[in-house]
Length: 170
Image (tube, rainbow, N blue to C red):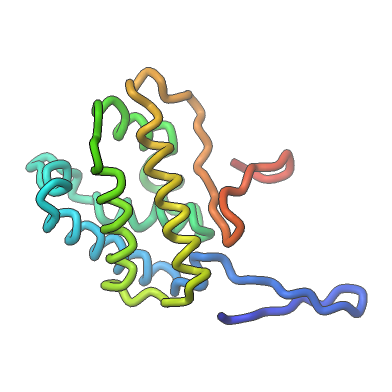
């Protein structure tokens, strides 16, 4: 893993790059979103929501921007496309999903290989943990009206979900 160090008061402290940086930045997330979309289309069960004629033509770039932002990249999704509440409402109210959540996570993990993301085990574990959490979070809203107004875009690091603090913007 790339290691950076911050020196304060004569002590060297390791500073990890964000998951976004470690993955390779914007290009890596574009490749991940393209690969994930292709894998979902190829999956006999997952292809339905990804093959609608009315699918937003910006779906893949939006997905890349969202994942990038959540995993430590710039707030492109929030500033250019949408917000967390709208994203959750878009995915809420789909009823019982069976094993689609697991299949979605599996496609995401395999797409990381397809996209050439680093194979570092700790990085891959962080990606899988994020996506498993994200799928559970999205599926926790049985109805669109259940989604809270002003939902905050999550931020995920090597250590998992980061809770916003009073001095951090949501």
